[in-house]
Every structure is written in structure tokens, then in C-alpha cells.
Amino acid sequence: MRRSLAVPALALAVVLAACGGGSSNKYSKADYVGAAMAKFEAQGAPITSRQAECFIGQVVDGIGVDTLNDDGVTPKAFANAKSPSKYLKDADSRKAVVAEVIKGDCFGLDRILVPALQQAFGTALPEQAANCLAKQLVKGDQVRTALANGILGISGGPNLSTVIKDKTLGAIKACALDPTALLGRSGATGSTGN
Image (cartoon, rainbow, N blue to C red; front, side):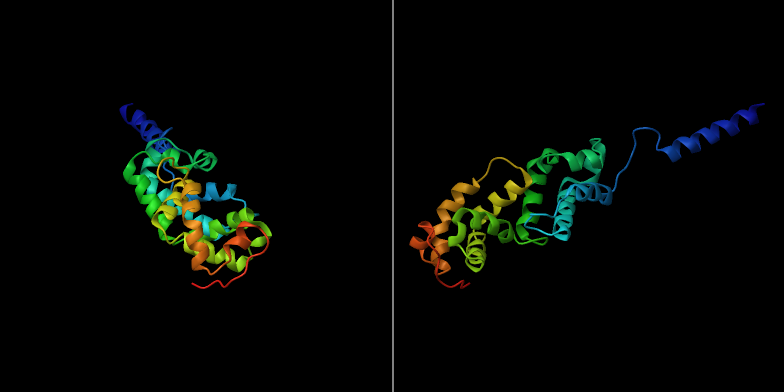
């Protein structure tokens, strides 16, 4: 009789282990990235799907898969979060993720600025000029940090609008653009020198 009780108990243990035992789901980096990518819409985005996937992977690495799992964050909840900074609980993890974004391994931060610059200056800013301005602007640490914080939804630190306003005239000069033409929205001239 004792032996017959041991077999069902062993079978139950195997079934519970196979089912994950309830709340002990362990998601992988691929699970979180995949869920977030399912939400990504490439239309109108200044980055490609591949760049977005790289970036999301950096965010997951910065937060830590173990942290997400330990906090009970499902891939669906991660993908639906308005900002990944929600899961960046301490200053070290925020700094690590911002540093990865600033490095630009997934995409150049200047690519994020180009559409905004074109919108701000309208038709006065041809694409080559917008590219030059964006490259000049992201040379500054404050601009890169403010952009990364904005992308990640991290408050505090340098304000992107203020930093860009402070740096735009220097960038216009570095790109040999006519500031009066740009500011007057009457057509930009000049080279896109680097």
C-alpha cells in the first residue's frame, strides 16, 4: 500500500514541475523582446524594426531578465508599458541603459532628431541639412543624455528642448547653413560639412 501512494505523489510532482508550479514562470530575453516587437509599428518610425529590436534588447539587458521575472513582469505587461523606465528601479540600471542608448550600437541618435528638425524648420531645412544639424547636435553629452532619457521615459536630467535650443545656433554654424534663412523659414543654403 505504501508503494502505491508513492507513485501518484511522484507523478504529481512531475506534473507540477512541468506546469511551472503556478507563479514561477521564467521568461527569457527573447520573450520580452518578442512581445515588445509585436507592438512595434515601423510606419513613420525613424528607426527600422531591426534597430528597434536591438534597442529593446538593450533595455531588457539593462533592466535584467531576472529582475523582470522576480517582479512578476510578463512579456505582455512589458510590451504594454508606456515607458521602460517603469522597470528601471535604481540609478545604476538607469545609467547603464542610458549609456547603451548613447553609444548608438542599435541606431544613431541623430536619426531620431532628423524628423523633429525637419518638422521644426519645415521646408526651409533640406534632408542633407537636417542630417548635418542632427549629427552636430548629438555630439554634445547633454543632448545625447536628454535624447536617451526621452526615449526611455526617464524624467530628470537635461531638458531636451532647452539643450537643443542652446546648441542649435552652433550646429547651424558648423553645418555652414544660413541661420536667417532657417529661422525665417525661407529656405536654407549651405553645405552639410562634417
